[in-house]
Length: 524
View 1 (cartoon, rainbow, N blue to C red):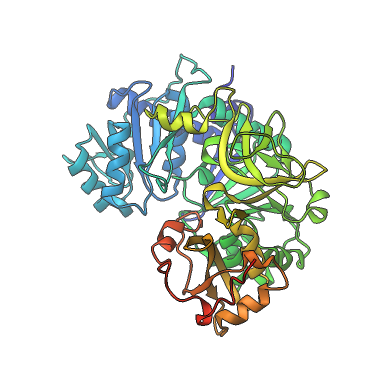
View 2 (cartoon, rainbow, N blue to C red):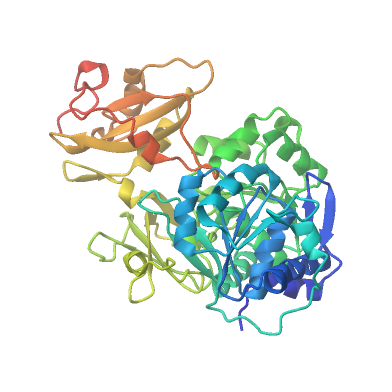
């Protein structure tokens, strides 16, 4: 039977192996110690708070060992963990709380003000401070509470379809939706990542992306706990600290989104790093610019690109070190027992190098959205295929390439234009730091591309010069109608571009085009 209590199983096999190193405290925790802590956390919920399997507990905190406690406590008790985004407002989080109906909130001192605002809105039955030394009328002290319970194992084994946690989407397409992550999905993603990415017990990987996100929880923490490796836990992203810890703890894999890899590359200590212990780098969350890939390859480093979604597991494809250089830009082939297909807007299969919506099916797919059968039916069809909303291509060797989001696709004069194709070419310009392309309404063509461009420090270039740079590289119908210069692209905590914020800056459809002429979008 598949259970999400991976920590418990690993602690049974190798209790004395170091599982976690906390950078902020420099403390080391073995699997046996973490397992005991997770059991104590679960017993606080059940014995002191009278929570039962299926109840929801929210956590509002930076990355820390108590977050790890709570995550694995959910895997032992059947109580559902609901991580809350620390960058969200009380108003935004209230929508999540109203949706999932939690009985308990755990919070850190760093977010006490926000936690108090939520308590006023929600009136949690149980309010647990991760930092308070003593009990108070307002909150229970976590440190005090775990000393009052015994780390007794749970006698009831949870079922594969029991919900482990609810991970809420950003809500860019409407109200936030709680993705129901069952034990099956947690376990399968971990095991399949170990096998398909060929992780080792000797691997040591930094975790600095937020643990309220699927990436922070399951990209490498759950797989490494399955194989018996170690994570180096940061409480947040600090490029200098990450570079220092990478060397100090001789990490073997470096993971991040492209934005993080760019920031690390620009960090003063990066150039002098010893990479002899690094096996490979792994990028996910967004397409990896080729110029950034080349910058790392020039250091002799192997770069793998990953792909996943909260709803289908953060690791769905794999590519070998040998295939990486001969298939630049590819996310690889589907992992073992992962089915993938590409379909058009009618649901018909597309072949060749044609782009289609990527659909995935397998034991790594979620159960749908919490208390939202209508939203679930939009993405999970009757045959079990999850429609990702991402556009992809598949070459003759079975390697997949992400082309962009289907909802971001621009239809101009009946022609499909994929923003990622334009972005890739613009990033080849030496003056450009980052770029995002989207469509805007046009009276003649229906939609036309607009490019948001952030320049590198000290760079100076005009919009027409960028269009001329693009002209020999892409079909003329893909040339941006306008170039809008901004200081930096708005991003969420995981580094993804917030396109809704950019959309608010789109020009009036009837405003003048680049240079006051039609040079950017010539007659077709």
